[in-house]
Image: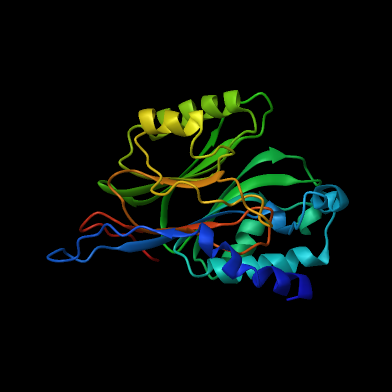
Length: 285
């Protein structure tokens, strides 16, 4: 790991003040329940950013390959290996800038995830393959890829199911639009897609904050919840915006949620621990 990455890693303690825990389990007399460790991370295709000026001076990294990208991805894989399910945004599915490597697959291999999947929302051929990805320790039973509405094409949702029947867990990975009007349209589409599903996790870079009109709309129309507001994830070098979220349905009990100080992107990841309903099982193989 180069000196810049070491310097970034040393910032870990700086972000602990933006971390929170939730513990609302009543342990006495309960049957042991399956715990899942979740994370969501906008990895900016492996580009670390230390200031707003970097968006200009390092803009070429969004088009051309560079050596630090691989070391960043290796560091991300190391930290994400602690989790059961990881949602990824701004991954490249194999173009010039990524060395024609599918970054979701690369992270799955490096972090030893048996199962992974992705959706390419904006295909620019050899120049860029803008994608969403999912890493899972558990067997994927079905995958859906949905296009989301917007003024500029290229937004979508990766929907993955684990388990079957009443013991189905639905994970939706999204990266929503920059426009509030487009985000509300996208949330309406997501609400229709997820309406009949019971155990739901919606995660990703949503580009709105906890006190926004969009979050109010979710609370009123999607019955998903965010346990702690104010988890600042952006920009990674001085986080003051909470635009990355993990939202869960009431059937899933939240144990812990926090921001992680892994600054290998312009975002910081969020982690969450949940308890599945009693007698809920998932296949590992």
